[in-house]
Amino acid sequence: MKYDMHSMKAEEFINDAEIRETVAFANEHKNDLALVDEILEKAKKRKGLSHREASVLLACEDEAKVKEIYDLAEQIKKDFYGNRIVLFAPLYLSNYCVNGCLYCPYHLKNKHIPRKKLTQEEVAKEVIALQDMGHKRLAIEAGEDPVNNPIEYILDCIKTIYSIKHKNGAIRRVNVNIAATTVENYTKLKDAGIGTYILFQETYNKENYEVLHPTGPKHDYAYHTEAMDRAMEGGIDDVGIGVLFGLDNYAYEFAGLLMHAEHLEAVHGVGPHTISVPRVKPADDIDPDDFDNSLSDDMFCKIAACIRIAVPYTGMIISTRETPEVREKIIRLGVSQISGGSRTSVGGYAEEERPQDTAQFDVSDCRTLDEVVNWLMRAGYIPSFCTACYREGRTGDRFMELCKSGQIQNCCHPNALMTLKEFLIDYASDDTKRIGEEVIEREIDTIPKEKVREIVRERLEKIADGERDFRF
Ligand code: SF4
Ligand code: SF4
Image 1 (cartoon, rainbow, N blue to C red):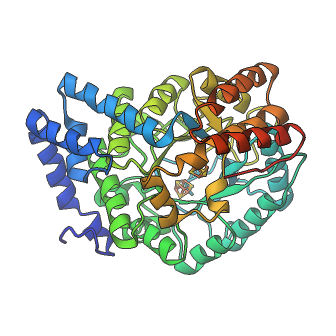
Image 2: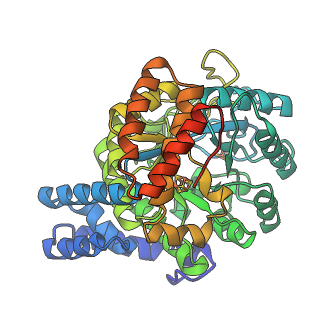
């Protein structure tokens, strides 16, 4: 097998030998300051880096250079994403699963976890609970089970989610995280109006992948790794990739992740819409210590910084798996989307207490959405509930063009302020409201065009008078 980013074969575009050579090259040159400088100069042009170049930065140990890496990541984050953080929530539909993934409590052999699949009435209840928190953007999650969770079930759930209009609430974007499937099924998801299709690779190391997925359809490395190509062939413009850090050597995963991004860009003309950076966490039947590749918080943050530099246009997502402290640091370095107020159990939002018995992983950040919004604003960020792009048809290459030219900022910033205003009026506590109004007042003045400032002010007044869903 030879490395070829244009190939449609998993083992050629995620080529084991190329990854190993990359990691070895990065280790050999980690303190080659002339090379590190050259790569940093290239990165400053904000056109991204190759997997090899980014791997050298990740391996670099020189303290002054590492600081430069962090500073540059922070600057790129500011240039492309400003101080906005988009919020979303996961919605677990079903934990029936026929796969045997060793790191997930939903694996088939786990006989003591209660299995649950939401009925459409229960989906509606969850959605109402999520709307009452203030969420507008969901990522739906389900195990792989052709009998219990066929594509028709997923499509029914999407329809239900979009149909619920409770008080001023609405879910305006549904992202989907379900198992690798056929081109035909991806087209059905596209037709159902999904936002991003998300699928984590878990690990790019084929040998380890097969060990970690001993049974079930997910065992097939090529079928899983080539899923994004089928999704794009099926018409889905925006795909989200990610690895589960801790399963394999982080340097290997990092190179694989960037090679996947390069492949999508080379073949489809559009790189991934988002990259997620989850880490193995404790859960029922799962002890992270069973995986000997766990990485320190510092290295985790360095990975995020290097991803930010290598693919400046790709959104980066972090979940409530991480503690508030890690989230704070990593948001600064590059993350643009976070989940808030999450419950990782099936039917968890409609329950008053946080139920754990059907949870996929333990949540480290247990704050409510209002608390997360409050915290973000106190830390200098604008929490955003914006879902405008896909609803305006700004997806795929159209989106990337706007992103690369920096024009997207003219939409993101005002949209963040208007959706925050909706949240403040409809869902926020008094304290959050007070801080939020100050943030909006301060941030309106930073909108560069006077005309846009005027429109935003008008719309904010209309929102105060009860109108909803304005967008640029
Ligand atoms: S990771 Fe996904 S496919 Fe694997 S057991 Fe868990 S739910 Fe099933
Ligand atoms: S305008 Fe588009 S890119 Fe910007 S926050 Fe909204 S949905 Fe995201």
